[in-house]
Length: 113
Image (cartoon, rainbow, N blue to C red; front, side):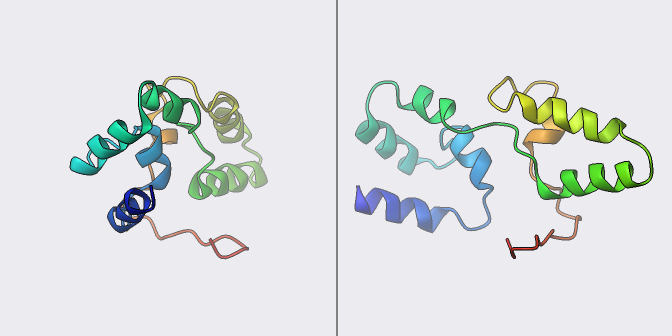
């Protein structure tokens, strides 16, 4: 288990953690098969059930807050609807599933994450 976890950590830089876990490690090649062999039957269902597809990403929360501050509550309610069902299907909610696009300045929270 220690080697499997260590190898995963080596593969993670530059990857979106939420999507990597949500999508049951798709795209990790040999590592994914090693994980499936180790985790056993039902592993994909378990990892999918324990990792939300929709999370309130910092840039989306900030956009909703800015709009609300300007008197437009619509973006807030759209975001609220998306995050209310975080384990639901991703189809139709891709903008709340995917990480920020490359051109967006990295968002730094108050706590530094």
